[in-house]
Image (cartoon, rainbow, N blue to C red; front, side, top):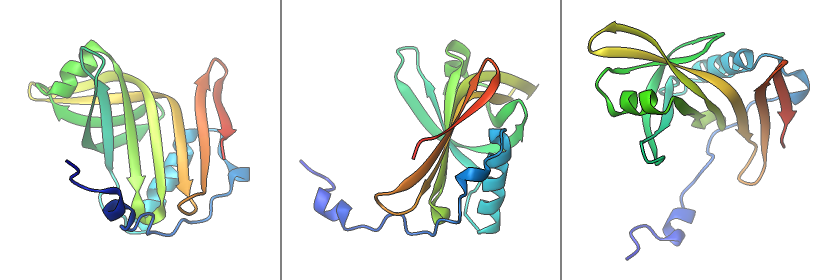
Amino acid sequence: MTYLDSEFLSGLSSLTGHAPEFDTGELPGDPFELFAEWFRAAVDAGCDDVRAATVATVDENGVPDARVMNLMELSGKGFCFGTGAESTKVEQLSDSPVAALNFWWQPMNRAVRVRGTARLEAAPNEHFNIWRIEPVRLEFFQAVDARNATRVEYSFEANGWVTKILS
């Protein structure tokens, strides 16, 4: 049984926003600078839930699990979000301290993917934890139209951040 067929889905609009200028010739060496620039642009453009990110973890069997959380802080150490101390994600992060984040700002046709190591940043009380994702890879994606996109990758290597323009 098909619940949503391809004809119906292909008839829906996608990438309905407008992508701003993105000059890959002027990239900062620090990906957090570019993230902060894109984040502020999303705020200025009036994007809803600009702090929202999909946080992906893995369970004890290596099966992915994802949910939406709000960004609490971005520092030179990484991306922080809060969660209940007894949540499934805390159990998963404790057992396998890796995570991925995905930010999507539809009106700007921009996304940022983050992959890295998860660390408990703070436990301000017995019911709440703050976790930090220390990135090893970030990918900045900006759709130009349904078939074309600009992608930039930052990877953390022994000598610091390495930048590649992927498309």
